[in-house]
Image (cartoon, rainbow, N blue to C red; front, side):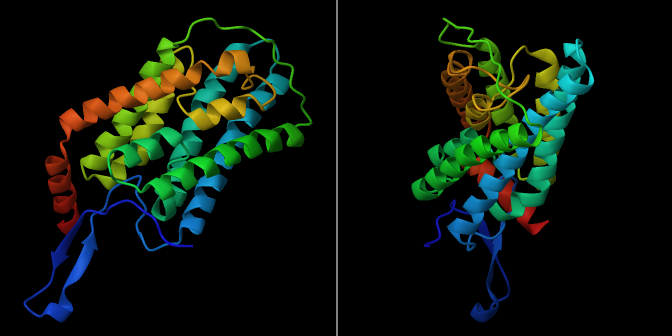
Length: 264
């Protein structure tokens, strides 16, 4: 399969001999280290990572509900710790291969910013949604759980907490990436996810997680009536974050930061 990747920011290093000239890939988080890796390999990693993330999210809710019944606060704290921890671990493990998105919002904003091709973005997003559904289903099977989600109808089109949570997440992701500080990304995202889970009433802030919740059993599961309104709110939050990042890190400033990180 033909490679499709983001447009890497690169600098040239070497002496006067043209043969010794080499291209340095500017280090940044949420972008694959080697753009020559096949799209199939990178897409597979995105799907597997999202599967693991949804498995942990669903399994955490099921495990706490089975072991500690009648105390939803314990389950909320467990999810607030388990999901961010899993995201940090997955980005550290798979970030060099695919960028470690596991979230269609990150992929879509990279495409919108001209950092990733349309073919690559579409493949990533498809893998993320498939992985999410598979991860929720796998957790249901492992815990032998069946869905018992109450069909609560949400009439509001917008979910303010999802707008805030998604905007904050994407600001952290692209702020870390465009600053050229590659080591900060996974931990910055984990800290934001933990803070948002504690401070806000709903923090799916990921369309793949939202779709997966319609398959998941237990506390993480949501009916379609509840989950679907999250999607436009997440997209709105992502667009707000994109505007903020474009103002804070114009492309020229971002490229300078990345180049400086590459030669340090």
